[in-house]
Length: 326
Image 1 (spheres, one colour):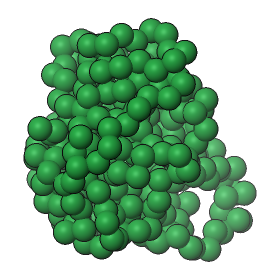
Image 2 (cartoon, helix red, strand yellow):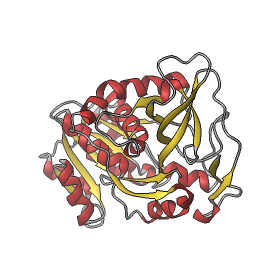
Image 3 (cartoon, rainbow, N blue to C red):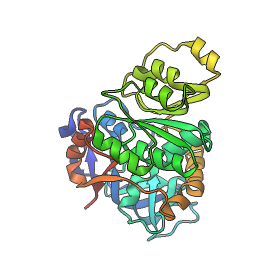
Image 4 (spheres, helix red, strand yellow):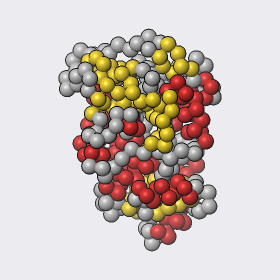
């Protein structure tokens, strides 16, 4: 088969479409013939040599895919050759085939094209696990999403609105904010021109955001604490703004607030399977009813993954960038 390899870490040009051995499904795994994958910022870090795959995972980038079951490994029940699926991966999505633990597979939601389903696993699992399973967003609460027009952001807006929450977003352009509003965002904040702490305080009558989904990390830590409501929950899922910052414990204590941080890739298989099962139970019906949808900015040939990485680095996209396998 062919896959995107990274012979040496570097810029987008480091991604090479090359012939590699076919994967073989091990005990509990399913071999998927990939139709499409999606680009995540973690892939950019892997390309730069800053985020290696977990031990035993595929060395190729790609944390999600959609496709058809090509073979079923020993001990697997519930999946058959020919099934249309999408899956959460520890790596290997930028390839024509990938072996996936059976517990990390999902059926393609009814009414959705197979290619589009590649845009779902990573964002659905990240948002549901952090915003709902960890931060316990409730109806009528306020969720602040940083990077509202990203793949994560567009999914977070829709899921929060589906459960009856109020949603605030930050984004850097009017076009992106307008799109967030179309998805249901109530409070629109241009982070280049406005202070999100002041805007959240104004919009909530001084109460603050009950849950904040943050992809920035260190750069926003202090201001996120200021923007939190009493009993607020800050869920950190990224470090685009750095990895080290001071935490004001007094603010945290006074607000009886919580700070959590999670990642998906290196979790044990059982934990990932539990998240995938929760997504299938709670998110898939919303997609099948049309209440929630994947947002795809563009599709590119998988062999042109370098261009897809440039698009993400420029942050000009809205939603997900897909890579379509030949």
